[in-house]
Image 1 (cartoon, rainbow, N blue to C red):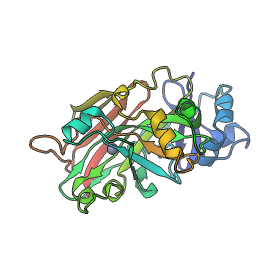
Image 2: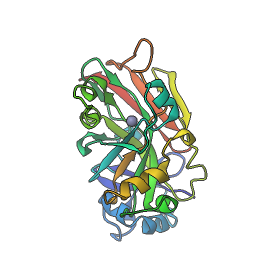
Image 3: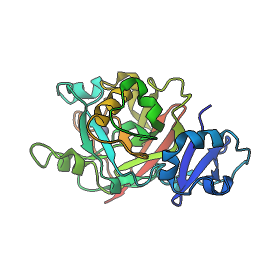
Length: 282
Ligand code: ZN
């Protein structure tokens, strides 16, 4: 059984029951665990064991107030052109290695964060987001999921004008404005997720479905990405990876469609969670 983990006012929480109540991890464990989310990722197996013993019905909360489940990752990565459907619509050759860029940590936000629309070329990208648990170097593909704490749904919001303002493009800045990396609302423990390599995700814009895909269309799956990245950098507890977006983004539409103030993006991964982002004037 997968447990759910969240962050509220900077403190680690377990999400319990059908009403999504929360139990404060540090308080419920009598101080065995720290309130710091990053400490939970370091000791994820112990947190899982503890979570299975919790019978507290928890405290009701407004899910829109949750922070990102890993609110201040030391490293945050995005993978570009990682779905066949998105590479095709972009008119690009599928990458030979995972096309990697940084989503700087100051862009991380909770799943219900407002998205400031800065300029006229802001785009949506629904993504499966993974958060690293124990981390490490040189993690093989077959062991990758053992080093992942859990998964969530997120948006790799992209300022296309900024992204392509330099040549070669600087993906990192174009995808790192304030609140351009919202994800959540909680993290679902990766262990015991039956269909973790074929999750169904959708994105709606003002109620209309604009993206709809299974994660089994990924060019480089989660195992490939973890093996590739950990062969170069040390993956650290709480690190965040945005794994790529399927076809249906705004820039590839004819004519292109971009976000404007008042728009509402709803992103869902079945069995994992739903986030909602209101677009506001930047
Ligand atoms: Zn993306």
